[in-house]
Image (tube, rainbow, N blue to C red; front, side, top):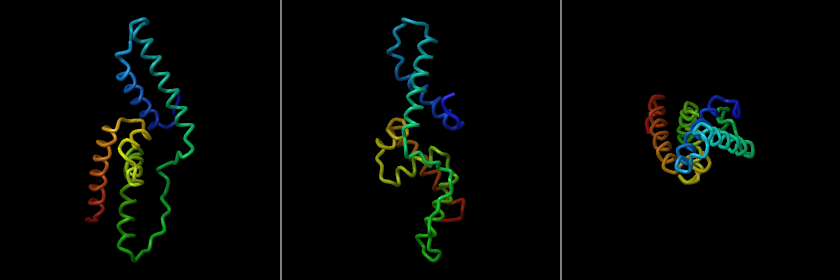
Length: 142
């Protein structure tokens, strides 16, 4: 109900589960457990939705990347292979790798994506590995 895209709904579901786990020790038993779960879920969804709507820098990462490349340049060739590989990543993987390339710290990436710094580090390492494999599959060696 709060998110249109299936990926956004999955992200919201993960955030709700995380918030339920994180706040479980604050459940006092004053209401039914299901009522408490619903309240945490709805508050998380509303907060998540507002946070997403407030961001003015939301960009669809699946759009074509228009980059002027010098066809004769070795660096341009490497960059072209890199961007072709990035297009094959999931939305979250694209966000993580592009935030990393922009020089963001694990803490900053975590805050931007609403995950923990440890989770950001793990996802970044997995994304780097996946990106390297995709580039090799394209026939380009480092």
